[in-house]
Structures are given as C-alpha cells and as structure tokens.
Image (spheres, rainbow, N blue to C red):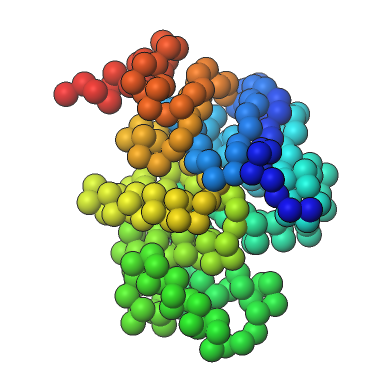
Length: 261
C-alpha cells in the first residue's frame, strides 16, 4: 500500500510515561504529516526527549499509541510490531540523529563504512557501489571525500554530526528523529549544520521531529511546534505564528527570554 500525502504519516495518541512518582509525559497527542518538520521545544526536564524516545520506539510508554503509516501495510501500531519489525523500520524508513554523534556512529570504523553499514544491513554487498554511495553522501553533507577512510574519532564535532546525518539518510527514510542536533557546537558550526538540515529536509521531502531548547533552531527548520512543560503540551501551532504571538504564559516566557538583551 503506497503512502498517501493526504494522510498523517505518524499518529500519536495519549502517550503517557511515569518514572516512579514523577510524571514524565501526560497524554501527549499529535499528528505528523508527510514532508512536515515538527519542533518539540521546552526547558530541560519538560519531557521533550522522553517524548522523542517514546514515539521512536526507543522507550515504551506506559499508555497511549504510536501509529506509523508504512509503505507496504498502511497504518501500523508501532508497539504491536515485533522487535525484528521495529529494528527493520529503524534502519530503513526511520532515522535517529543523536545529540552526541558518538552515540550514533561507530567511532573506530571508517567514515565510509559508517555510511555504508545501513545499506549492508539491507543486503547490499557490492563493494564498489557501497563505496561510491558513501562518497556521494559524504560530499552531500560537506565532508571531503578524501576523508572516506578516516575514523570519526579524527573528525571535529560538526563533522561527526554531519556524518551521523549521512549515515541516517543513506537509506532514504521518510521520518527522522533528531535530539538536540546542534547542541554543544560553536555558533558558526551550528549555522552551517542548520543550513544543511534545512536543505536536506526540503530536497528529500523529509518528515522530521526535532527536539530542541533553541527557538532559533525551531524557527529555521520547523513548520510547526509543540511547547512542552511538565510532561504536557501547553501550546501547539505554526512555528512563526506561535513565536510571534504566543498565547500560553509559559510560551510567552520562553520567547521573551530569547528576546531579552
């Protein structure tokens, strides 16, 4: 069954999660549409990373459902899939970009092998084709192809993050999860990475969920925003509209703190 652009790609309903007595998520619901970039913003401890881990099947919620519109079988409940089905989804139609690139890369394996590994996991074995594809993707994320045999441990932080992006996108996923992808990088490196992400999401018509505490990142990349506080979505809407005219006191506080000199 082919995907339909008129239908949500991801449907999240009533996601809740507790850690002991602490409520990490409280009945979070939203739809995500093909080609849409959604930013989840809020302060540390607001629940945004917990939400990302839940909807990407990295951590099972206590309640609620996450349904994904697969290419072959239509809308499927992610947590009713077998572990093998979840793993296949995670390395083909989904991507996950970690805040720390070392968590998403094999640091002592060459850059080319890091990119090609996802293709090999799908059965690709032609070495020349794998190397050519890896080189094309290194060039696409602005890494010198002469570094194809170098290990990521020899790369700068920005290069590692760009390599992690190439590793995730080589299988042409339809949905990518990103956890603070620019955090910890110098301002100039952040700007370069954000420009790259904006171009890739647009050119590949990627659907993405980006967790960030940086409202400038949200404004640049996201069509729509969810604002989280205490595990709940307190405001949602189009990014520019929400940032220019926030309605909830917490969103107003976040926006005003950015605008203060």
